[in-house]
Structures are given as structure tokens and as C-alpha cells.
View (cartoon, rainbow, N blue to C red):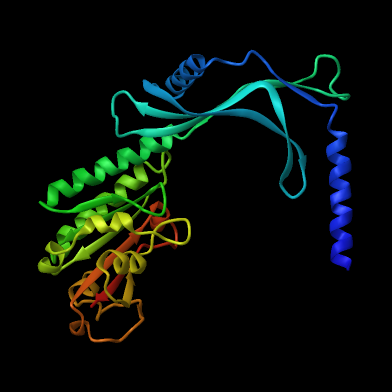
Length: 305
């Protein structure tokens, strides 16, 4: 009974508040045409970055303003003649750099408190072009580092986040892999101000397992949470096999790697015999902050069968 009374009171309060907003008017100020929005987006990104880009409108909607908040927006009102746009932004110099942008017309609010001239809200423009450019630069540098060391590898955008990379390689040479990981580390630190890139490296020692695997299945994987994808989840999805986490270590330890996780483990998670699995995968997980202060990247060894 108390819950019903509480809901009724809240509903009454919302009704009164929403009714009290009815005298407000929201009127767009010199709204832009679609061609003008495109030109505006291109000019603003050039002004901010020096890059020449192509802009395309992918969505146009009626511009609305929030007129009531109650633990979040609960009431809206249209802006007369106002529109908001979503745009696709593509670099003219590198078509791999694709970003999103948003534009909202400026408007004036007329109500009893704003006076005859009303209250003006400037146009809004936002984009993620700089971060997308930074991500593309990091990915390009990763590919360069991989090309210098491997004839065959796979690199994918993380299926769970817009700012992650997942790399699949095959080697039992610790020095080659460690040198690659140091290259990756330097790259993400250099470009972290443009984009904070997380990354995971799946390392196979077994060439037959690596050559027989359809890594494109990774792109069909998913996580039930946001953020960087998790090695155990991804391996089980793209292999279709049972995956057992055996042990892990800080950084990429040589003895840990060469002993298949038996030496210098930070933690033993499952003491199953590594030889009882079809093959092992070493999973190296890192991000820029992993190399700062007390933080560290981790290497985990998984048994697959």
C-alpha cells in the first residue's frame, strides 16, 4: 500500500512539474541546411587537427531539449525548426580512419525568467576523430612491428571495445616475442594521449594448432560486458574447445614461457598436467597504464582440449 501511495505522489509531482514547463518555447537560431552541416563539420575538424576529411550525414532527427529531470531525463520538448545530426567522418588521406560526429542546432529558450531576448544555447559539435586517428596509428605501428618479425599473424579490432586490439602469433622464440611486446609497449605509450589502446596477444607454440585454426571466427565472438575482451572467453568461442586456465605471471617472463608455466608462476590456478591438453596458448594482456607505477601486464597460460 505504501508503494502505491509513493508512486501516486511521484506521478502527481511529475504531472505538476511537466505542466509548469508548458510556457517554455525552444526556437532554433539560424538552423543549418544539410550541406552547411557537412561543411561545418569538415571545417571544424580541419581547424582542430589540420586533417582534411569527408563528412556524410547518416541520421537527422528532430532536436529536443530536456525539460524535466528526475534521476535522469523524463520530459522533453521539441526545438522549433531545430535538428540534430549524426555524421560519418572519413579522412581524405587515409580511408581507414573513420569516426563519428554529432551536430545540434543552436536555439533560444523563451520563458518567464529569460526576459524578452530569451536564453541562447550555442550549437553543439562533437566528434571522436582524434581518438580514431590515434587508434589507427597504433594499429598501423603494430602491423609494422609484426611484419618485421612474422610471415603469418592475425590482428583484429577487439570485439568488445572500440579501443582494443587482439593479435594472434605462433612462435617458441622468447627473444622474438619479447622484442615484439616491447615494441607494442612503446607504441601505446607514445600515442596514449590520442587514444588509450588496450591489447592482447595470443601466443601459440604449436604450429599445427596455429595453422589449423580459423581465426576469423574470433570476429564472431562476444562478451557480456563492456571493455577489453577476456582470453578464456574468446579462446573457447573461436576454438569451440574446453579451455582451462593453468597459471599466470607478471610481464612476459622467459622462464615461465619456456617451462610452459611451471616456473616463476605468479599464481597456479589449475595444476593439471600441460601435456594432457591438445596444445597451450599464452595470453599476454596489456594497456598503457600496465607499465606505470605498481601496475604490470600479465601473461596467462591456457590449456586447450
